[in-house]
Structures are given as structure tokens and as C-alpha cells.
Length: 253
Ligand code: 13P
Image (cartoon, rainbow, N blue to C red):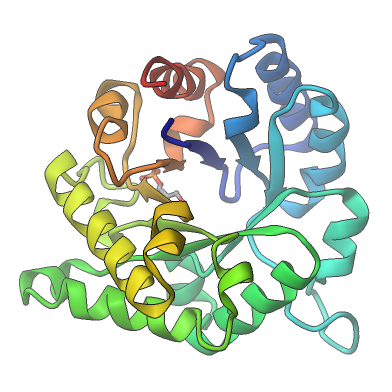
């Protein structure tokens, strides 16, 4: 049976009080596929969300982390700090962090290694800009991200990573990749990963699509064979919209 992960990336939204209420409402939905659902929230909301979701099966996590365990890195949060809160997931290399906060494939690679060592599942974001796609360079661009981001990561660790293909031109723009475009790139990424490791590893790894996924387009995207779920921004901020996407995945089981 196809495995899914429906993950909400709240980005820099909600106060802790709102996050707690959201988590309670989400838990009350009693999803049959709760184990395939997660929300990625700002650091300040992690403890509250974690305690509210306890026993629900729904996962939770952070949107970024530093790769060093401790030290003079003012303003940063380490993997042991996330571990202490009990997070399941952490986003790495989101295009917004690559664009506005100087994230590079080198720092992404270090973060993946630090999280994997600690048993926290990284959700690694890759994806091309509009300019790159218009120049037909999207496959080369994304393949190079995958090569660099997985550099030196052994197979048994690599298959634990969740990859999210997020074309930058589809993020927050309302412009979704068509199911065919999304499937084409997710299948391509699976092939690249299979080339780096092997075919069984490629079958095992979860590859999500992200970029203006919403209740109206989720079922068509999720039905594609190489798309194992979604990383959802805007539509993850409302319990009903997010739940509709979770239900769309449940119906495809
Ligand atoms: P939107 O769903 O708002 O387009 O955001 C996608 C995203 O960046 C998720 O990480």
C-alpha cells in the first residue's frame, strides 16, 4: 500500500494560544491515517503543540535547526533541544531559508546528518525557481541539490529522509504545478535517488509535493504514483482545509 505524509508547514504564523487550539481540534478529528499526518510549527509553539497532540498519532516538528549540538550561535536552536521536546520531524532547506537566510546545500547536508543521528526525520525541500524552469534547467538543478544534500549520507540513513519537491514558482502564488508536472519531477527525483543508492531505496523514500496544495487540487496530486503526500503552507493554517487534504489521502489508501 502507498505510504503518505501530509505535513503542514505553518511558516511564521499563529501564536501559541492559537496553535494549542488548532492541535486540539486536529486531534479531535480522529483521523484513521493520523500516523501519516504532521504539523511543522514555529519553535515557540513546539512544546504546546506536542503536549496537545500527545496520544493522537499525529506528528509534529520544527521548520529549521542548527547543525552544531551547542555553542556560541546566538539565536539558534540545536538538535538536542528539539530532541528534548520530542519532535518527530524537522524541515531542512526550505526555499525561503535558502533565499532569505543564506541556507546552502552544505549547511543542509550538515543539518540532515545531525538530525538523522538523533533519530529525527528531516523533511528536505528541493525545487527550482521560475527562471530555471523557463530555461528548462529544472531537472539538472534539482538533481544537483539532491546530490549535494545527500553527500556522504549512508543508505540506511538516507531512506529515512522525506524529500519535498517544492517548485519555488508554486509557493504561496496560488499557481500549482499540474499533477503531471509534479509527478514528472517526483519520479525524476526518485530516479536520481535510486541512482545514488539503489532501486529498493528509491521505492522506500517518501517524496512529497509542495506549492499551493489545497483541498481542491490535493486528490489529483496525491493520486500520482510518485507523490507520497504534501508539504502544505497556506492551506495548513485552517483545520478544515488541512483536514480535507488529510481525508483525500485516506481515501486513496
Ligand atoms: P503554500 O502551500 O502556501 O504554497 O506553501 C508551500 C510551502 O512552502 C510549504 O513548505
